[in-house]
Image (cartoon, rainbow, N blue to C red):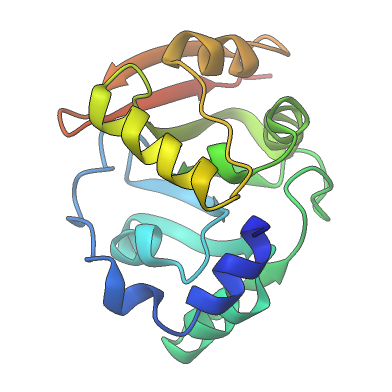
Length: 191
């Protein structure tokens, strides 16, 4: 089953199935608070960025699944865009922060997606990619399950994600979140 169909089906139920993340857990890796715009890419219902509204100027949730975005709209999220992560409809340097939580492995062309994120990231901005750590046995089981479900997911090691993000002069660091995921943080050089 292609990912977009699965997430279209999950859209109305997603926030009931998955618990709300702790609101402060992304403050340090995203360097919050910050002014300007936050892009929650592959953000679906906006669940991962819900606790960040008071720490950023504005947020925009972008996802390919209309039902996921509709659930975000029902929660009161004002800025929602349906678009492919490989062809973002934003001008270069639009966002001071970009957040991608547990979504990069669902995107079919992750190199193009990473290039697009760095294109729309402002000079001096930060990109945070949170992905399950494929080096862990439990995550390998999740990857196998997603393969069995025909989800076409492709998990990368932290070093592979670091290499994708280390283009266009971005300084990249990798850190464990202590819960089975890794944070890949890319800082775009200031002007």
